[in-house]
Image (cartoon, rainbow, N blue to C red; front, side, top):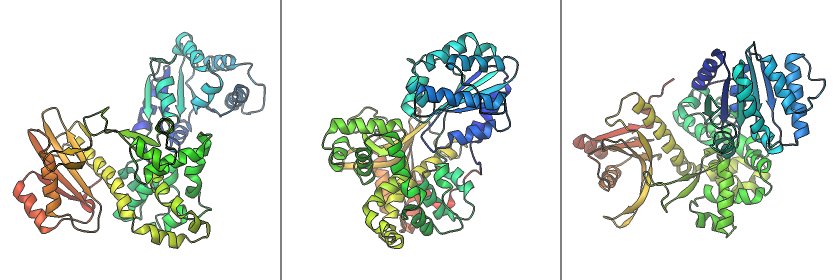
Length: 465
């Protein structure tokens, strides 16, 4: 079932209808649904779909030849083009008078085995494709390659694209549209353990409980998601053990280079930085700074994918039990730790909700940017952290705290958020408490008295359909 991606699909259709040369760059981490989006878009159109492979130039040329022949002769059996120039020449001739789409999927694979492909494409664009009705789509999963070697200034292709799309995981709202039978809290957990990745979402069955889904998909050696993180790392790297160790260190609480280096057993900050950099290029790890303090010494690293966060936090520690088929017992061990894990997920859900309401003009402060902040509290002389800080150029700000707990959120927690807001010098502050379970009477009374506080229960959040 194809869901979501309405904005991306609408953009692609608009570009297709232009009937002039278009060059679209589509990128995003693995499994995010790039190929599915493209396949859905081209299903009723004349298109050459060429999947690049991690092999040599000869094999890639053979696959491209077969892809072209299947469109123009109806069979993949036939001669192989002498070189990529000859293949692109035919594409040009066939698109001079008729709309044609050429998709090169996993473009980094082709570029790595044939270093001249970007220059060749640039030459064809400048001297031939611009006069054609070709729609060229380059797609890739290596974020650093696509951003630097395709979109970047140093790329031969720089300045020639007509559109670019970074495909991101589904939001909580989009995830909610996929599952029809989960209740609201089950939806949040489903969103967390799949990370909004369409392929992972398809593995859950909303006719079963989330306990059954987690046990059957993560704590069973025959399940796809049990093997997925390890397989993905093996596919990308020659030293999977080291990369797995780095990811596990972050998933279990390490966030600074020195901490990750020690917890992973590498004990080498230089090597650790190198592994982190490569994981960042795949969108598995991201760098984070306190809001408004980019390039500060307080840089930390976190997992971008909440499925990886879940897997590396809970699966490696229970491998022996899982191997013995004791999935039920593993879930019992893990269950009490899920609320702490969900704190990270709930923060992301709350940020998405604020952006939704901000764009609709439903908030007391219309912000332009958002982030998380941590640092020193000079009054209390301790380190402190603010889940959400959003502001605008007029000196107005929103301070948010997100509580995923079974207990009611108390007056003391509202007072703490109010104190944190005084560490900054904005002209206007709005405080927002998000809670899974609701608020105490004292918290509600203080919020009413102050008049600058919003109390939002998870169950009361309304999402666009």
